[in-house]
Image 1 (cartoon, helix red, strand yellow):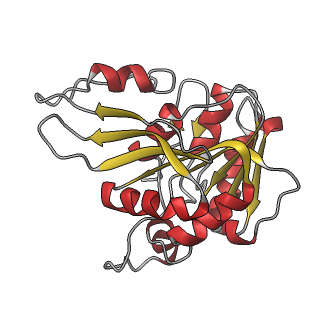
Image 2 (tube, rainbow, N blue to C red):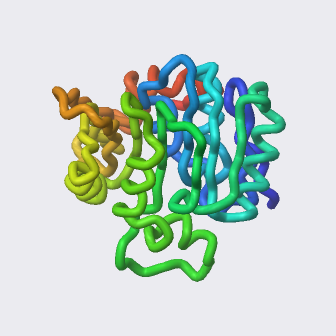
Length: 237
């Protein structure tokens, strides 16, 4: 059966041409990140364009979305064209390590590949989307350092251990954690994701936590509140 576009409140996302589909990580990051009202944003590894579209809904910024996989770039271009914000969204094909911009970005965001030295799927596209061979942490941070404005923010979501490694490495690029959120799939479980915001300012740090589901399996009120501007509905399942 052909996959139908995912309908959000103000836009739709067709992800059939993308290795990584619309998922909770992207929605969480797009909803949680501190978003300036305007400026220029960069979405690294945009895939189907989900996070870029969420940022467009939340701001009046001009957003560049970069993606290494050709089919995903074409898919994101179509999703941008079909959105209410097509004139503020641009998709670029290529690796961020080779991307040159005439201006710096005041928000850079990424749901990056994260598996390291682990068993890979047979599909080349899916491997590129999930494994960090093409975008290891050091290369990602080097690109952020090169592209982020002096007062800009870099926002990400990663499994907890990978996030901790990224944060530790970031200090060598003079990037520091200012805000973080531990994500729990359910009350009573260990956190499985960490969202963070890095900047060039080594200032005080704001710590948060988010439970997606309560102990009885229902979506938590905090998760509903965070994602309500985007999801058409949330079922108590």
